[in-house]
Length: 269
Image (tube, rainbow, N blue to C red; front, side, top):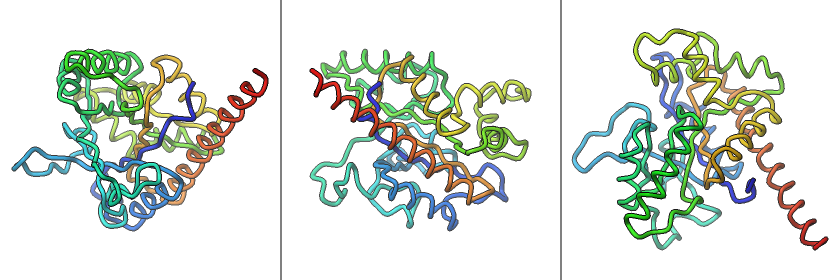
């Protein structure tokens, strides 16, 4: 597993419920700033077609996303820098990202047009693998190399020292996560289907459990460039901040451990 090269992205989801606190409120802005301070290197915003109004729907449901250059405290989600390089200092802004849903034909066409893929957060392992295969085919048709570091995968992540509490945060009847993933299913889906979708696609639990889920995904589909942390309009802002901190800390420790093992192997060679 090439954890050392995986970057972290941050995508904020507007509230599903009218009473929820979403982007533009102080807690959401603070989490975006916190993510940047913790080393998250990419932030995204919806990119509407020319002349088309910007939808208020989830950014994951937009056909295209962009890496943006303003501070996350002003508009969410935003980009401060990429790998420590200020966007204002960058000579060339990255092109648009294609938010990939279930249709592999659309994924192939987007890749042929030169757009980097971002697989949305409600896709299972099988569909993720099909997305990568479609990206490779699209790049091949356009006579370009498909690079795994260009692939972004979105996942909702809930980390807590108490695994039962982490599961409850994700699955509670009034959880914005539950409402969000219910919306990705067909109308009339029962509670069992919603919980199955959450179990398949949401990383929840302790630091060790979440890292284990991430490693299982990488072992199944191969490496990718950026894990995009999907942040919802959680009711408990303090626990949401703690979850973000615990996740970033776990990934950082795992990457340091991976680097140390690599150097140890080089010393023994």
